[in-house]
Length: 74
Image (tube, rainbow, N blue to C red; front, side, top):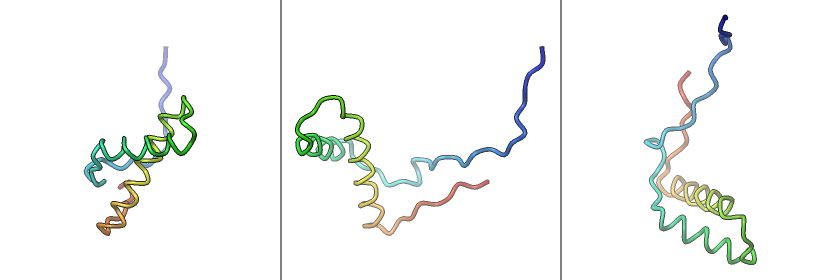
């Protein structure tokens, strides 16, 4: 049997955690909980609330520190 090989260029690599400011999980959890409360305490949206809270806090922290997202090297 032969193996198929890909000749396409690799996709952009996601940013590493070292390039992103560290956000304490407690802050993310608190904001996610607030989003859950504002959303009517509906179950099944925990991951969405967590990701939204994490992104919101990350954006705020990056704005506060003047950090910008750097594109991945090719």
